[in-house]
Length: 469
Ligand SMILES: Cc1cc2nc3c(=O)[nH]c(=O)nc-3n(C[C@H](O)[C@H](O)[C@H](O)COP(=O)(O)OP(=O)(O)OC[C@H]3O[C@@H](n4cnc5c(N)ncnc54)[C@H](O)[C@@H]3O)c2cc1C
Image (cartoon, helix red, strand yellow):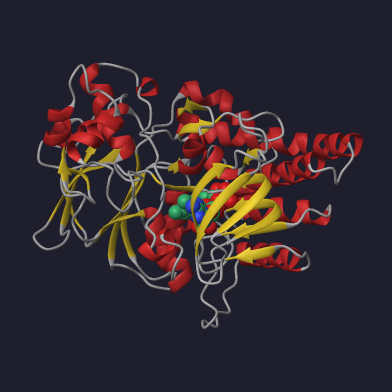
């Protein structure tokens, strides 16, 4: 069954919710779809309804405010629903989104489509990274924040970016022992000009100061220019090897040290979820500081395809504040496209968002420049290190598949099955791309991402046949 609406939004995180609220206020009929059980995305992750927690943070309060605004609109929210395919309707030039979820129609047909699909943790492969106890920072945070579960006792954090400090501080407050935080980036004089981007970001600076103070009080050492290089253990991680990094983030072997831990949280930033924009054939560009390949957009968040907009982290890593601003702009642009807002008012309303948009983009650019992992980290894997976890494909097998004639991620996927498992290359896609770049001496920006095929996420067979969900 296909239902007709004005606007479909995929993703009910900060970007998608803000788009929905603005567009609905202008009289656009909106359906918003999200794979999670509750709206909020990564930033406004909710604790389960059955939990009664009193320790509500500033972020919980912000979340309540946006949920409240959303509830006051007539936006239809389909949670626990996966958008697994998107394509144009050849007869109407509208967009069709295939859905899988209890109570969801099989398909929605819309005049406009906003993709607000967020991002996921950037994995780095190193010997032992598949051992139980090696967890992404995002997963540790999800367990801690939404389930109030500590996945271990004695933690080491290794990665890059300010979220590491936040997570370490949350772990200390939750009673975990944090033996150290390894930040891959090193403070450099050449970064001084970026300091101006911090101007006006007082709340963030205060937040950072609080995290730092918590770590100081708990005697948690913070080392710059260090990374984990190996995890060891029989059934689970028992010890990790760390090393100092050179300017290319290549480990310096004479500095290797062992540390006993039961949990290693790795957080090397995020990769935008671009499966749907790639599936549609939108044009993409490679910007390392935005997380890799991102859809090309105009000033109003429209991609290279008319009526398809991309907002938030899925269009370039920028954080929750920037995601909301982009959502607001896309909501206004869609309302104008559908004739619910006149040109002059739309232009004026979009112009009012520009100062905040520019400020948040400057800040995101600064973080991207300071905390993008260097190429040396992609040399940590040894021949027998698994690169594709779903299909258990090793580095040796990936390298063996790369020849002058087969030097794309899609070719390596065809030959080795790397990227064909349930995660559809979200874990290994960029690792394979880095290996191809190293092997063929190309820049990473010259290696195209793999071809996306529906279903973009695992769904039951029943959804494919239009039967039970
Ligand atoms: C793991 C993780 C942890 C983070 N922790 C922090 C933090 O502690 N502090 C901080 O400041 N920032 C954090 N961030 C960054 C912050 O959460 C994001 O900047 C912000 O949430 C981006 O908002 P968004 O709306 O673009 O995407 P998200 O909030 O990621 O929302 C995207 C939504 O799209 C849905 N979705 C995607 N594809 C589909 C599909 N095909 N079908 C159905 N639904 C789909 C997802 O289920 C998700 O709910 C974190 C990000 C991640 C990925």
